Length: 274
Ligand code: SAM
Image (cartoon, rainbow, N blue to C red; front, top):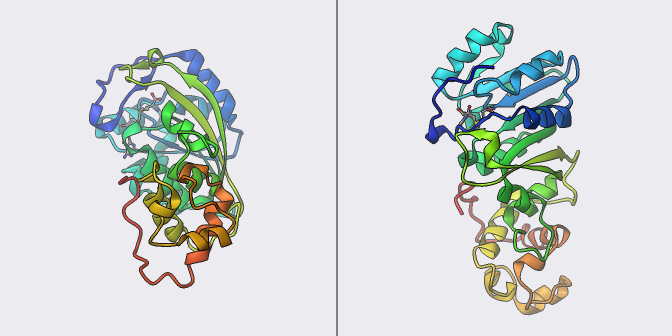
């Protein structure tokens, strides 16, 4: 395939050039005939062409005018399925799904990957699974277990809502232009319901942000606006541990403990802002 469109840095354009990596991604996703598939950021269509060959019903959402023109020319069979839009504002209801769920794939622009993940998680009832290429460090955070340096807000929020499977790493040489970082493929399958019953995702998110913004402090310091030492002990937690030592289940317990009577509750701050 000819790849001739100049990459735009502000759109996070690192086009896949390595056919073996493309084949590995396509095989891991294994699109089937008749399935509804949404590709985010198709670029010049290096993955799209394989998705179309599988017989899946493919929609794509792409922000860049030049790439839209290219996709329309090159893949006339996509016709009404090309959405010229920012994926951060794209609603899955635009796909006119009936009962079926959509599978999502994308070599994502790394500059928007965290807010995009949250945007999709908010619509997860319409999603059967997702396979993404992300910055390796982000995949490590998604899959991290308590006690690890990479474990944080993203790990807790995503693991509560999805099964996370880190697949394989992809080196910078697989792209043009080459990114400065390693990349990794991650596979996410939304749980039917959150892993543990959570009263308010927004409260959990605010609590996680407060705790992990001061991750070196003990929880009796970083979460003092929520609990005192006795309350931590009553909830089965040592007040001297740090945020990264608390499991997803324990985080849910903490958030639920304050939700009914939390007088100072404010709306969550914008996603991805720290
Ligand atoms: N899938 C292609 C590939 O693997 O070669 C391109 C991947 S490139 C890393 C990211 C793609 O996402 C680019 O095509 C870029 O224009 C597109 N993109 C960037 N920001 C976007 C946004 N907010 N909404 C939709 N697409 C976006």
